[in-house]
Length: 217
Image (spheres, rainbow, N blue to C red):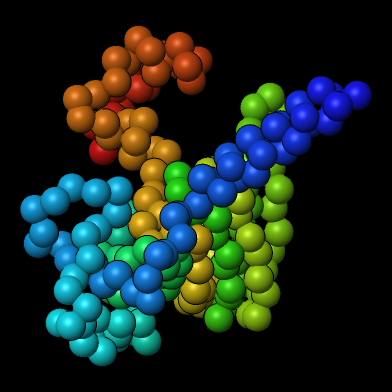
């Protein structure tokens, strides 16, 4: 019985460790303002000398400005990650403003390092995410002003403006550098190209169709 209890305890410790490693590391000091010019390579960004830290290191302005949505997808993401706000370094959070033209979309994409929680500020958005294999279940809902929706870490998700006027949303993410993989760009716009033979078999279409799509990216 004792050996079984020890085994169970070991499994719990292993599980808790894996969960702890699933998000950004916790800070070990009050702050660690990013120093992008440092020559040292670390998992994140090196710290600026605390004596040289200023209020501006924790400040970002301009999120009140609408993004330019005159592009093929009809949306614009304005990120506020550690790249734009050095004070976010080691804090495990970031956010973004997303602007949508009528019928505009934020194409299917994933954040490999973050869960996302989205709040609609203006307009109506159809949002959704797809669960992992083998179910590939689509979970979707139409959100209105003031509604909130969460996209689990790593899962493919999207938003679409279903109103006849512009929409605005704010996304909060559980990483200082959540990353983004837009599925179509990654699959059809990789450098160098993924072989059309592979993509044709994966998408079960003719290679000419793949070549036509790749030409758009």
